[in-house]
Length: 196
Image (cartoon, rainbow, N blue to C red):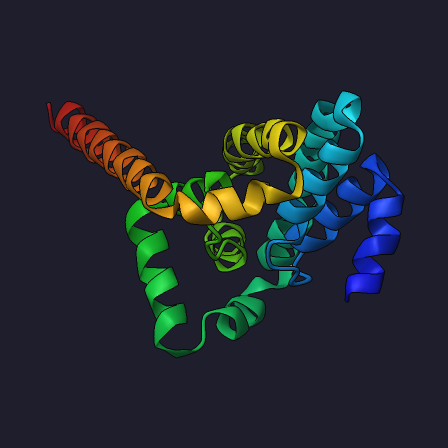
């Protein structure tokens, strides 16, 4: 695996794009995009933000591929991705919170499961436009932050994130709570308007 990453890292920005596309399309590469982005941004700081943009585009394309697979043949894929108690929790969360379940893991620098929620979005008939926008809103700040961190701190960046896990987790929890409350308020307001 290290040799593969070394070869892909040698491709520079193109390697970041390919890894982001493959990872988001369903090929499991936990932390691969983040690590590669940090490494490439550190080796070529002038190309850091370009790499972040390519990672974002690659992730969007890969996510849309997985989304479309789930949309057109997806119940079987979803059943496979969500088997077991943990998978059933994914389904329940998606039914309750919709695209929030896609946004939070896509923006988080703390590794969180995303693929099952992407599959849920496809199977449950979410429109491609709002889905794509959600991925972009999550990936842009995440990848540009990682590129900046790579430029500033190099390969120590991911270690720095691990040592600051608690503030990231609290920030993410606060964001999730704020978005949850907003969603609840918006839904109750919509239901109220519909009954008037």
